[in-house]
Length: 255
Picture 1 (cartoon, rainbow, N blue to C red):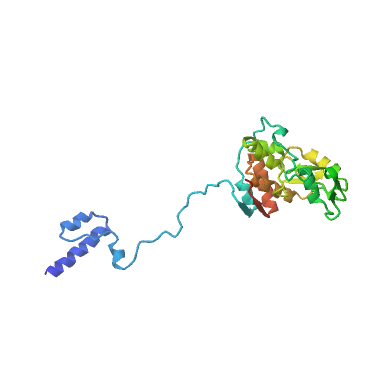
Picture 2: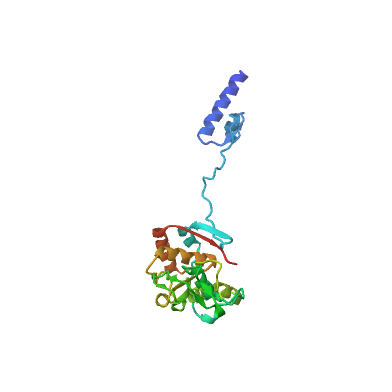
């Protein structure tokens, strides 16, 4: 009889739980309410583990460090978005065309020596007078054998750098930026006319006649290298151009 009664109580307990009744009612009938999860445990199973399917918090992009090697579209996203603040800019805030290694050739000379199409014939004589070389302007394809007819352009102009973050730098860091021989994309030999045409404008306002995709990647690389920001319009144009151009940005971040 007791066995039959126990079975009836157990049956009632199951019915009450299935209909959402208070387990206390089961105890009132003289039975024990099953423990939460008891059915799962009785079958030797364990609660489901999280395998990474839940939403994760958005990653916060920290300033780049070390070596960066990413698709150009990702590199554009790495640029901080900030309005350009050009107030207070003076070209003299960037000490440029210095002779860092003391060999008699300043930064401008070093770029011309590096970019000569005839490196074996190019010589730097007294006062670093360069002879025997030949150059091709990266912006318009013009060629010359007279280096005095070419300018050496800051791919990211000094004025743009100032407005994109360099105004807060030390004088020493601004000097390193203005004379950056650590990355060949920072400074480039071009015709004076193309340099004047570009002036201080960013890619939202000016692009070269030739190799526009290369120019966009180089611009982004320099900005990533020096942790410079981009305003909303510039960033939008860079994003669109990067999607059309493709390629990667590989650059070592400057200290």
